[in-house]
Image (cartoon, rainbow, N blue to C red; front, top):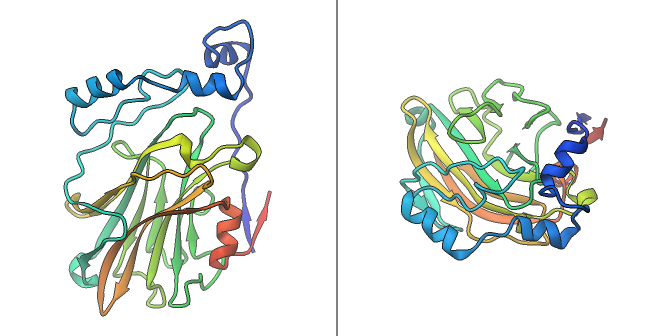
Length: 256
């Protein structure tokens, strides 16, 4: 059974609360927070004209750490499958993920599920995320220390256990149920698959559909088909948190 550590953040103090509420005389409700995070169309157009690959709609919103989207060269569409190559020629690849938030309460996490042909993990440790950063065979490594992207998953296909035929990359909003958060509060979510040796982009996918009834998003996957690895741009989500996703893929968890 996997112990799933609960992510926590430091408590808010008077100054930080005032900063979130723009130093108003009262705490903001949901509508007020929505208005704080809303920007005008003219601001969006101005940002787009200044930098074609930069989506900066949230850049001026207090309390939000904005990420500049990297240049995505080989973009694919939702549902499209792209050939990457065989394990020998590919060697090592890297899935790099990023996003921006409209609501500063949204804390997004990346996880990767290593699945067999039955669509399930072969054991509770065949799943990497912030609390378990390496697969048992050391072929898949999670990192939250990225410069261009927010988080990444490095995959050494030459070391990957032969029973693994699919790796699904998931974005999950932490504490979404208790804080009433959803993917309608997320934007600019993308995944790009790189050749790890050269950092050359093999394929990328930018989500353009965000659902208010979803708190976890299967953004994409790499999978083995007839001896070749392919990328599938999924872009579909579920109303399950990380623990729920673990159950979906066969991981038994115990929260701390």
